[in-house]
Amino acid sequence: MAVDRTSTEAEAKSNPLTSSNHNQFIVWREFLFGAMAGAFGEGVMHPVDTIKTRIQTHAIFSGCKHRSSAVQLVRGVWATDGLAGFYRGIAPGIMGSLTTGATYFGVIECTKKWMDESYPNVGGHWAHFISGALGDTLGSVIYVPCEVMKQRMQVQGSKKYWTSVVAREGSRAKHGTHMYGYYSGMIQAGCSIWKEQGLKGLYAGYWSTLARDVPFAGLMVTFYESFKNVAQYGNHKLFPNSNIHIGSSFEGLLLGGLAGGLSAYLTTPLDVVKTRLQVQGTAIRYNGWLDAFCKVWYAEGVKGMFSGGVPRLMWYVPASALTFMAVEFLREHHKLTSISIDKKDSSLQEIS
Image (cartoon, rainbow, N blue to C red; front, side, top):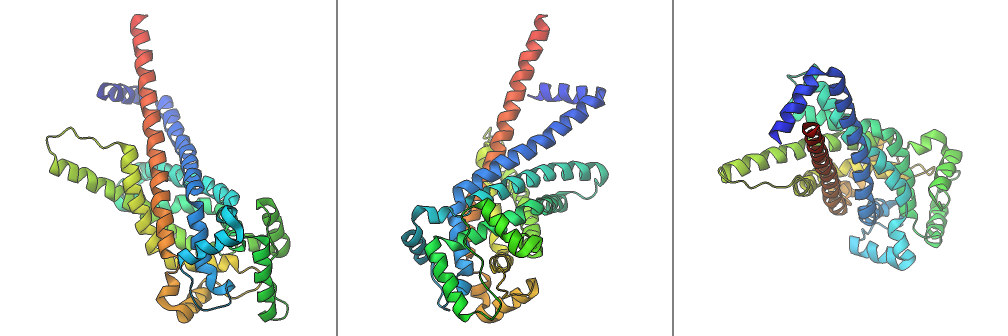
């Protein structure tokens, strides 16, 4: 292993073109691995995300101030829509996660390499935070419209349920305001939102999404790298003469889950504001991010700001764990494949 790495580094130094191509391949590989891992995590954990969205929007669609528990909402979704109710909006959800995962891991790799070369003094946690925040910001261009479609489809449930909600809202709505129609699929939802509200509707809550995701993404990659350093330090400190090696996939599973869960819970209030803005449609209840924040705080207090915090935690811990595990597995598998190919090539050269 050490011999292979040394020879590769020597070859890269002697041939700058080879080194450049290798770096470009690594970056594009991170985009691909990130997309695959992001879609995998979203697909597995989408039902939990549906319950989280329902909890956060229950106060504006239920018509009552009493807050339903997660168990009650699960029963309600199952009773009115069956298993399909938990997977409403999964198509835009996976599409958004593909984009976010690709840009998150791909841009992290690009930014870290760029900062190491251009700003070597700005390292450590700041480099990780900036890399994660920038990656998520770039992905938001595609992710936010997907998030709007996903969340509106999640709160609608069955057509019968949404018809009753629209009727109830219409009876107490001000003149000239109305709820949006029922969305049967991703394409129909996108076309309908574009027709009714234009680009503004598809990017509803854009700045609140960035206000949530920039600190979340930065914190998650910072926590993940910090946890890895702590785990490595603890391993050397507790087992100095041991050959114990924790697989990178298991490390990604455990530490990625911890990093994602901690970051998710700390940014729950920002997620509540974002969700409220994105599902309100043309029946305007909140005029911007600050107005939504203040109204939720005054009307519902701390509980309102952290509503859906537990399901959000339940979603992000396994979703982040699965995502980081998938990325680390793909990295490790590709590395092992590359090493075996290199060894085969070198043996052939010796024979020749």
